[in-house]
Each structure stands twice: as C-alpha cells, then as structure tokens.
Length: 95
Image 1 (cartoon, one colour):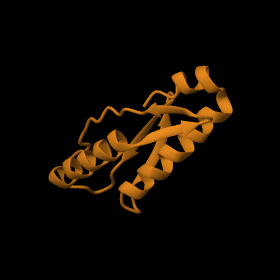
Image 2 (cartoon, rainbow, N blue to C red):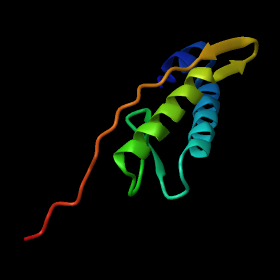
Image 3 (cartoon, helix red, strand yellow):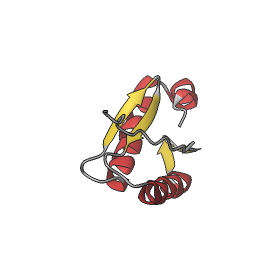
C-alpha cells in the first residue's frame, strides 16, 4: 500500500487517517497473536506459528479485503492496492 499519493493529494493528516483505517482492516483480518508492523512506509503482517496453507488463506483474505477497500476524504475517493508476499521463517535446528 502506498499512502504517498494520498499524502500529496490531501495532506499528511489525511494520509495518517488512511494508515489508521488500513491498519484496522488488517487487524480484523489476522489472528490475535499476529503482529502488524510498519516498515519503511509499508505495513507488514507477521503471522506467528502459522502453517503455510493457513498463511496463504490469510494472505488471500487480506488481498481481497484490500481490493474491496475504498478510502474517501472530502469527495476524493482512492482505491488502495496491496502487494502480498509470503516468506516462511523457521527456527534453525540446533545440533
């Protein structure tokens, strides 16, 4: 999600409102034990102890919800996209 266009068109306070709404939407899409973090202006979701098939399902749900999401401010309407990628992180084996 790139909030830069909203910041340019409507100002940083409106961009902050967008980030708040997207964060809320994402929080409603993931499990309680998962984490939302902001990395270099982007929002990342960290899924804790999540099998790959379940992670793919959650990623698809997030993608669909973001695709349906529209942000409106002062009669300006923005369609916000999302890039979804999955990386599995395992604990190294000790031996």
